[in-house]
Structures are given as structure tokens and as C-alpha cells.
Length: 357
Ligand code: 2NL
Image (cartoon, rainbow, N blue to C red; front, side):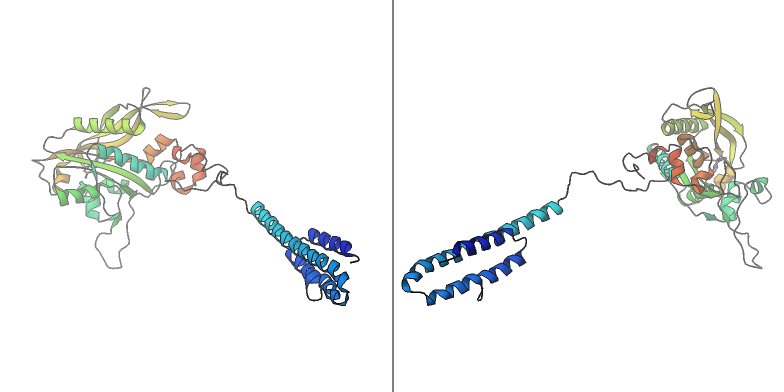
């Protein structure tokens, strides 16, 4: 049959060059569909003589099979190529390092609170808590600070507001955590070994004072507690906190709630504007302490002829500044964490996490 070779070449070329399944389907219809080129040729077989048909028939059938096979093969080839393209496009490298993420960090004051609590816990102290808005009685009277006492004025107390005509003494924002310890004495009696960490408030604002700050007070009561025990506890605490052996120096002082009272200094050096704790010949005042005044024990419903003990109070923000080298207390509460990082607060230096932030 004339032109079969050309027909064959033309369809196989077109099928070979098809770039998508839609085109391939168009070619199938155009070649083998009802009115397809090859189908029309098949129809012509009827008009041939038997001899001609005997040659042309098998040739046309073979062509039809060949084109069909080419279509099937090309279709499979296109599907494979499409899958390859998808695999290329959707490939994911699971071994890539993850992108850095911003991560919050614990506030230095909170961290120091936790460190302090843990050190005292190791020495058998438990934690006592109480209200931040206190009565006049628990904040002052119970601590042997009566109404006329100058300590009330010195403490720059924040008072709450009473309604017009209500003449009861106003509540105060606690100026120390001592009232927590009075409440603890009343509720649990002696012996006792507690610390009272928490927020306290005084109307004061400069480089070393903020109106809200943090304090830890400690109270140990028993039948045989002395200032020697106090000295050991404090040296043990400061050495653990600063990570070096720290000597303390006691200087006689006065606080209405203790007798005798002592201010405690820790050994340090001042060189080039920086303070180093646990070395040198200088002393840094860091804490107030003493033997609990009998009147304060009585206010806490404890018999002062049977029990005695020591108490101390220290500023947390102060020792946090010393440990982590932050010169201005206001930056704890008024500035942001970038500032603290600049000053090298250790807990902020988490590698990788902050990279690229
Ligand atoms: C200071 C002084 C001090 C106390 C706090 C205290 C508590 C009770 C009874 C007796 Cl319940 N005393 N606490 C004692 C002496 C000093 O703190 O200037 N701290 C920064």
C-alpha cells in the first residue's frame, strides 16, 4: 500500500515529540479514532481486490498496533517525567539546620530568687509567703515600730486610700517581708526555720532604688539559737551564691525588731570600677540582721523566755546586680533584655538560640 512508510514515520515522530498527555490524546484520535487517518485507510481495504487486501491488510494492522504501542509507551514516559519533575520540585533537605527562633528567658531577678531559695532549702529552710498589701499592725506594730517611730517615715511607705469618714488606719504596701514571718510565727509557732522571699515597696527611685524591689528575710527560732549560727548560715549562703568562699564582717547596728542588731558586710575588692566578691580587703554592706526582739516574738505569740533566734533581711536586686554586673537597678524593671544581654547576664547567653536575632 502506497505511503504507509510515510504515514508510519509521521505518526511515530509526532507521538515521540508530544510533550503532554492532552496532545497525545489528540494524536490518538487523529490517527486511530473513528475518522482517524489510519482508520480511514483501514476502511479503504473494502474497495481493494483480494490480492491487494492480502498485502495491505496485515501491513495496516501492524501499523495500527505499532502506533498504539507508541502511544502507550509515550504515555507512560510522560507520567514518569511528570513524577520526576514533582520529586525534584518537592524535594526537602531534612538535614538542614533549623532556623533560629526567639526564645524567652527567665528574668535575672526571678533566677536569683530561685537560686537563693534553693541554697536556703539545702540548709533546711522552707519558704513562707504572705500578702503584699498589709495591715499597719503586721508591717509596723508587730515589728516594734509604733506609730510615732521615725522608721515609719524613713521607710517611705505607700499607703492605700480609705473612704471619706473611715478613720481606721490605712493598709500599706509591705515595706519588707517581715510581716510574713510574724504571720508564720502566729500560725506555726517555734521552733522554725524559714525564708520569706518576695516583692516589697518603698517610695524611692534612683540608681540604686526602685519603688518595687525584692527581698529575702530569714528567721530561725529555737531554744538554743545564737548569732554564731547566724554567721555560719550567712557565710554558707554567700559562698554558695557567689561560688567562692566569702568572709563576713558584723558591725553593731540598730533595727527596732532585733536586739542586738548587726549590719553584715561581705569581703570584696573594688578595682577599675568593678566589684569582686570573696577577695580583697574591702567590705560591702549587704544585709541587716540580729537576734529577734522579745517584743516581736510576743507579737508572733511566741514565749521569749523559752525561744530565741535570729533574723536577717537582704535585697535580692542588689545581690543580683553584684553577681551579674548590672550597675543601675532601674534597668531591671525599666529596660529590656537586649540591655541585660549587653551587660553579659549569663543566663541570656544561650548559644544558637540568639544567633541572628
Ligand atoms: C535591712 C534590715 C533586717 C530583719 C530584717 C526581722 C524579721 C522579724 C523579726 C526580726 Cl520577723 N527581724 N528581719 C532583722 C534585721 C534586719 O533587714 O536593712 N535589710 C535589707
